[in-house]
Length: 296
Image (tube, rainbow, N blue to C red; front, side, top):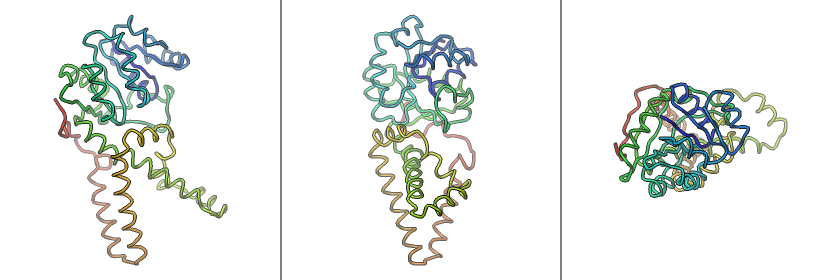
């Protein structure tokens, strides 16, 4: 199978590396000639160009759009003249509701996708073939999704070592608001709050003493600002709902501390410890392959 990947950053580059390793014919498209050069040097792709029109001579059976979220629909529209009748197209965006229905209307062989994997570093230079191994890879089919297209993307997910998770776009966006988009905003707020310490000596001491606790809770807030902006802009309502709930939890803890209600605070912390154990990332268990609401 020939697969074309549009956008060779961390996700697109990592997909290219693994699929090439698995014996697929992989072709890349990047606006940056230097990225093409790096992808070829790393052996991630067999060919690479800077124009979508070059896909016509590759004749791929599948195209993966790995551009920033705001460019997915425009990229798909620009791709249409170069697609064969049943070319499967998928994306990797972290928000699905604004993408899946209009993309499927543009191209019936579209399947919404979102690999739950990443690193603090970005770009083709940070790509790695095993980035997706054992990780969830969400697919968000809707009623109009072609079953053959869904099956083809499932095969690709298996090839890169990920676990397919099926759900609908709305459920996906609500879930990632909690576990991905809210943490970015909370983490950024933590960094901002610490940085507002008025005593320069205290601020410098805090930076010196910062260890794993601060590192773990602040890491995602120190990531790429444009990605955080995309999350907020395109998943606005679900993120606002999550932020309101989080603020209510903080107010509760603030009131317990202010009122010296230590027994109640202990119960809150004990409950948090118990709930924390339910997340597979902390206590590995088999990933559910179908979370409801999706086709297939």
